[in-house]
Amino acid sequence: MKVARFDYHVHESRSRDARESTIPLYIEVAESKGIEEICFTTHLITSGPDVNLGIRDHEIGGYINEILELNETTEVHLKPGLEVDYIRGDQSRVERVLDEYNWDFILGSVHLVGEWDVGSRKRSSGFFDGRPLVEATSEYYYLYIEAIETGYFDMMSHPDYWRRYLHKMHAEAAHWGDYSDTCIEAIDTLKSYDMGVEVNTSGRRHEHEVQYPIRDFMVAVHDAGIVKVNIGSDSHLPEHLGFWLPEAVEMLKGIGFKYITSFSGRKAIMNPIDSVVRTVKNG
Ligand SMILES: [Zn+2]
Ligand SMILES: [Zn+2]
Image 1 (cartoon, protein in one colour):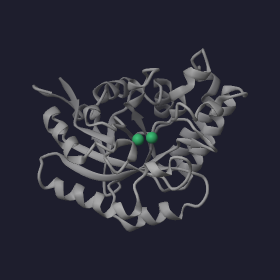
Image 2: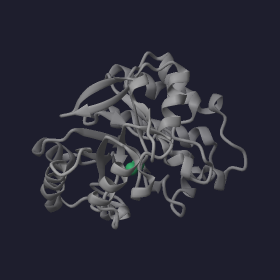
Image 3: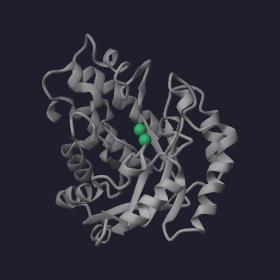
């Protein structure tokens, strides 16, 4: 079977929505599937309704130390990273945490738009309610652009995560041409900050069964001349490690991308796309 050599979006037990998913359990899966590198991206959430899902300040040292210590016990390369929720307002905690520790990778995310959590079955409906879809998506991308402009992040995650519960509110699928204008603004901003985006395969496990973002979005990323793209399963369970990543790489290759990015000490490593997926015997 085919596996991608690395997975750059993985939640372990300090993300409170992945409480049972310890780092040793992920190592076991990586060893058995033949995955060579895991970058852990536990949630850092500074305010809002999901604040309790994120890592606590007093846990951060232990999180990084556990990763570094377990690195010595396995062939799998383990890297410490974060998925930081961009929430408008006071950024002092984000700045302090990014400054104080040696991270390999910082992923920026937009889950919360005002009071609406687009990733929540219960709390996403108000995001779409009573207004045209394009108004909602524009609001999402303006926040996404703000997140990019902070300069805090190495890459931005799941660029159309607002689609997660869209099907509950809109009977018809969203058409790229109807909402692409602000996507393209966001893509141009990524380009000007020399940043890239993640293809997040959790969408393939969600009800609509499409990765984040849709292929059209990645075509626009490619057309804009962005060369940095990375891949992540957004695993909250060890068995999801590496999920649909070979297929994501194949999709990106078909669009014309030449590299998949990984990170070390927050510096991008450009991996030739043909080196990222390999065939293993017993995966
Ligand atoms: Zn996320
Ligand atoms: Zn995540």
